[in-house]
Length: 108
Image 1 (cartoon, one colour):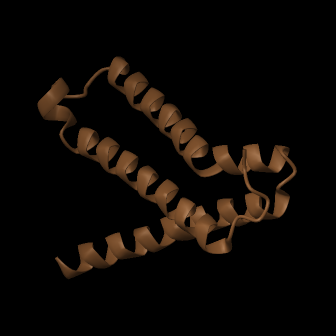
Image 2 (cartoon, one colour):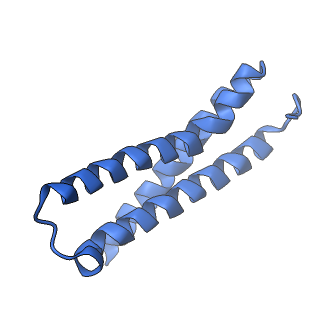
């Protein structure tokens, strides 16, 4: 069970791991999408649109679990302050990773 006196540093580390996990997931989905024509052929029918929308919904659910799953469990266990800290820290790390990705794209 969660330790009530978990340090802010420990929470930030957990948030970084969640953000990195989410970033890896996003990168894998982006890789799949960027090579979709090679893998699945030309997307020119309704089934392709259905597959894309299903992938979008599943991705939203997966990222929701990655970002908010543990904070929700902590919140329901009464660790409200730490739960909010973890959720906001995870979003913050995702923002930092996004900025680093954009800077990398600009520098290429």
